[in-house]
Length: 561
Image (cartoon, rainbow, N blue to C red; front, side, top):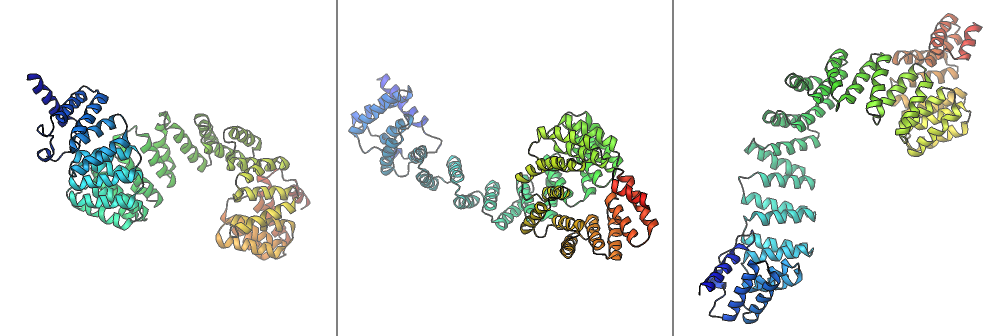
């Protein structure tokens, strides 16, 4: 008798303990297995419960099957069979028994939960969703069911249904902003930005501690180009979480775009006072000084970062750029050389070294740098283009074609490459190729100022189609009216047309608009010579020769005066 009571207790423990996380309604009064109905069904059911308790699921399954032979109207027995089939991953069979159990007891929550899970395991996601929805209608505050539905809606990208679910949850939990925020995020995915903004503004108005809502709202403002409200929103977050890196970076990007350098200083100057070794803050502040041309402040803030292994490459790059802007090329060369050692994948170290050497007409140094760079950045279009242009400047025009043609094959719409290779074709007197390249490129990019100018200059140099050349460079100047190179081209076209006064006007403007170049100085000397002002011509030719002492034609002109 005591053993019988013990088995009965085990059965009760099993029945209650094996219940899933879903809270069950108390239906035992109507659906419990009554011993009086079938002693054999009852006995087999208890044996099955005991085997379950001992993790002998196959034996338990057999006992439950035998129990069902004696009582086919018991929802509890059908559910027990299904539960063991699930443990044996026999989901199709489990579903059949669960459907029978559900028909016998439509309000049993555990049965519905098992049924939804079985559908899920068979990838019958829509049936799983329908079952979870039915379960939720009986138990609307069941968080596990809520989470399962959220997962399925997300997995199946059912944004409309997910939005509707979150909307319903907002009614069930009016004091919990979690569902409002999730609803707003789904609305954003659906491009319903106004709805999302309205919901989030309501959340933060109701509860100013909801930093996640502020963050999403700030992102929305940014997406809508409303940087004023974005700044206001991020500032609220920062007032509650002063070290929030994401918000600091977002504010930095907005202020940087708006060129509000003072605002960036206000955020980052106090930060490096309190956190002297905060390298990222130092670099951001230094960049702010850089764009304001406060070179000394930028250097003072950046220099300590050279000792930070993680950030020192960025510090070397910034110090190199500062030295470059100050035209302290020896210092800039030192920093950029170190950058290529510390981080050879940073292309800017290589690019700045080439620019420095080319400005000093040290073409062999440039070529060595470019050869090293291209072993790492073999398909970098800018480096290939610079390699070709530098070879051309060094007088190796035929060698220049190979890297330039490779760059053009990589990107046929790169106008810098197109112009560079066309210029080399001109130098090699391959004018059919240069004209064809310009014309084909201008069909695709008819308003590209660089193409228009360079084709115009090519024609002017040859003294052909000067009316076309004038039209091309005029169109280029419509886009960039103060571009010194384009003004020089227009002046040179007028020179070739014999309109020397107009040539003088435009080339003088070019000289005022750009850094002095040997070519523009030589052009100005040519104009003065044609106007009979030989002293002025000599003055500008001499200045041009100082910048380009290898120019033999210019030397001959000076000797002929």
